[in-house]
Length: 287
Image (tube, rainbow, N blue to C red):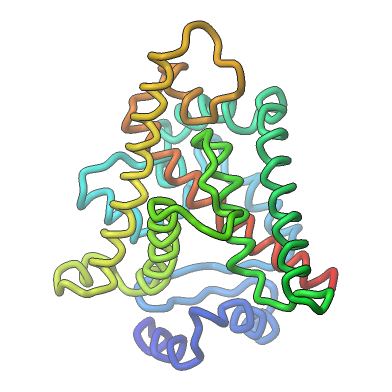
């Protein structure tokens, strides 16, 4: 029963303990199990060999996971889906173009100086925190620091500009962007199991907050596009330094502005938590 499972999931504080609950289920049911929580139904696998078999069987047009909260927002605001939410031929045509600008070995060389600069600043920030402690060590919850590091890195590569998140003072506009991303992730979790359409109909706060968060994220993309066009009008010839993925896609002119905006915001959303949480777990394992 999906509703009963949702209640038990909520009682176990499942949104914060999902990894423990899944591990317990794998120990109980084996390496493959199926479940329904609320309206969300899934088949879960844990063995890498099974994941490889699944990926090989996906075919030319793999079925993308539908994040209902995100698609509901885009439908509500009449916005395009990005590469993270598209399916079929539309997904493939966008993905082929983005591959050349995001993951090809040639273009990755452009990212290295940008990421190196952010990495150096992050290490310097850690040393500064250690020095300020007066104890030759710094004990803290690194999740927020790594979130800032990941967002600064991703923004530098995608938007071609630094947000200044490695500084002690954060610009209010950049802080608002951080708050929007944090709120977007926070409000996504419950809507993985409770239909966003229902929450929208009853005017639930979680839905209103979700809309507000995505509005802020898309406003950031609009601002960056405006700045890029203004910069391009000033410059003549090839830019002196790599301008970022967003500017490259705009100059390439193979996708509509709305398609570019949609994919850039989704690449940002998909890149921040995967980077910060993976780094956090890596440091935990090393410790």
